[in-house]
Amino acid sequence: MKRLIPLAIIILLFTTVSSFAREVPFTQDDRDRLIRLETKVDEGQKALQRQIDDLKTFMLWGFGILFGGMGILIGFVIWDRRTALAPA
Image 1 (cartoon, rainbow, N blue to C red):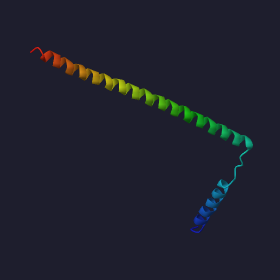
Image 2 (spheres, rainbow, N blue to C red):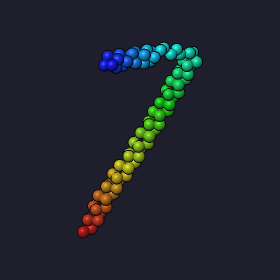
Image 3 (cartoon, rainbow, N blue to C red):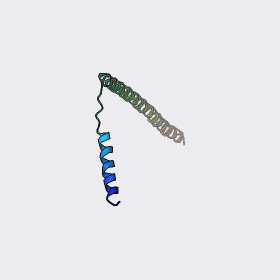
Image 4 (spheres, helix red, strand yellow):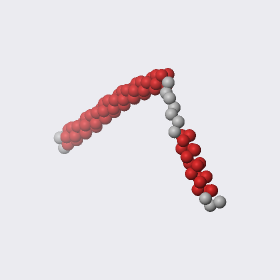
């Protein structure tokens, strides 16, 4: 009985391993589908990269306008202080 259990395990392992070793042939239709899928993925990646570039450009313009406005406001405050202190 003690020899039967390891022998059963070995036989079970060999039968399961051989069942996974089957080759699945690809047809020409499968290859064509794979090529079409790769083409769609490449087009999607290009579109996504274009959207990221557009968002980056928009962010740079937005921050440029924001910091430009801050610079103008600081300049106006300094000019206003100088003109307010001149009569005194």
